[in-house]
Image 1 (tube, one colour):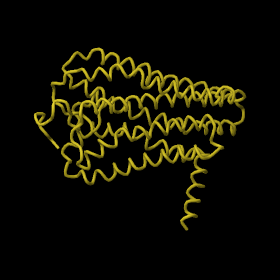
Image 2 (image 1 turned 45 degrees about the vertical axis):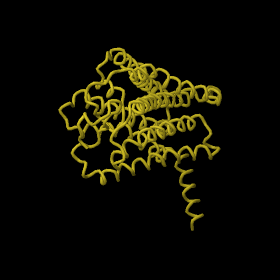
Image 3 (image 1 turned 180 degrees about the horizontal axis):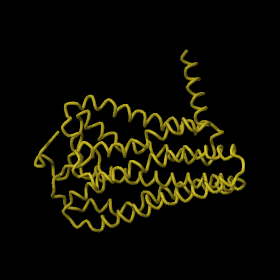
Image 4 (image 1 turned 30 degrees about the vertical axis):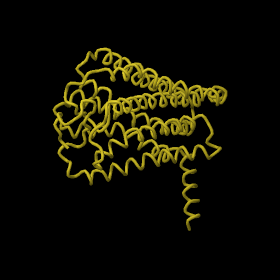
Length: 316
């Protein structure tokens, strides 16, 4: 897959697969195809279960539906380039397509962070202020929260993403991953990138980092409220309602931190490691979240089991 930059059109970029393993792409494509199928089917199943089960029409599950929709869109935004490389259909991506893909990847990443913060607030209200839970998280308020999440996630990243269109790219047109990221395009630009660099840093601090701090703070308040309860059985029951969300938070933030560390301190590492970490960052949360909530959330688990048992009976 190694191509000279001279063979790449000036308005397109070379996507990077697993360098040196091109002969094994047919085999590597099997687990990646399976993962993408699980991402799409798992999140569609969670959305279907929440939509069709009246007992799940509650704030907690509305927020879970937002998370599943975000994960589904993240899978859809990268599947064509990741599998396209492995299947041999794609080697290049145009500048416009690359900018559009980076817009959705970063926007959906911020959206997932916002949804996880909202879910932490949901757990805080449910545990620390249960009597006012239904009056605080009404359907109309949840709808407004959803609109704010979408606006916050996609509006503020628009200026630096649009700016990418006007940069002059004179370095090697080879990207570091099998999809487009804002920082990757900055690396290839010869224009003044200071605005994009500083803006992106502030955006990460005011979204991902701030969300993580607020999630941690919400759990400090939850922990204090739970420990104030005398009954250990009640404490255990309340902690159980938070396990799924805590797992989802870890599944989201650990790959981001790991990818950042690899980019910052792992320049000596094999390019394959960089590509692998990039794919983990993109695919791990959408893959794991449906599994986590199917296993750890009793209402989702029982509804899915009922759905599969009905399917098996109808095929019998």
